[in-house]
Image (cartoon, rainbow, N blue to C red; front, top):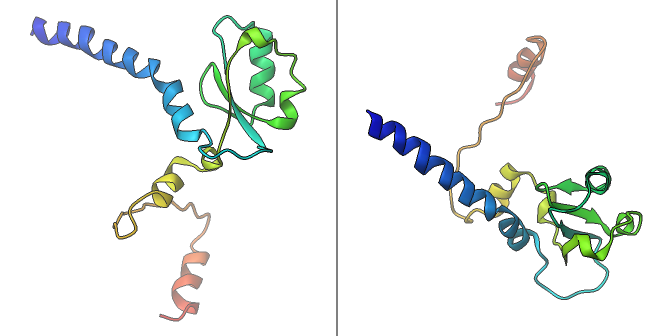
Amino acid sequence: MWKKIIFHFILIPSSVYCFSQNSSEYFIRKYAESKESPGHAFYILEINASTPPAIRNKLTLTAARKLSETLFIIETINLGNIALKRSFITKLIPCNNQWKLSPSVEKLVFSAPGSRTMHHFTILLKSNIFLHDLYTKLPA
């Protein structure tokens, strides 16, 4: 029994730690623009861990999406509004439009064309009138 407890305390936290180290590189590979074209609307911005909290908060408020504590997707227009020193910037890379998709839509868009997947939806109804109309008024 003690071996199982020690296994869970040693192995599981180390694997979680390893995954969290690679998350920024994963997002950069996934959302970075592969083709060279001028005039990008959005950029992936990675900042140092030593960036002051005031600048991090300002980035969080102006970013289009916060991917992690140090990784943001920011609009080109807002990039100039933030007083950000070059020493705080680790990477600034143009990004594609895939970051706009939700995870479930990403699965639909990038799945194989002939694959069959089951999608579940939850609908909240306040009354049964809608269901009654749906079954009685729509043609079969």
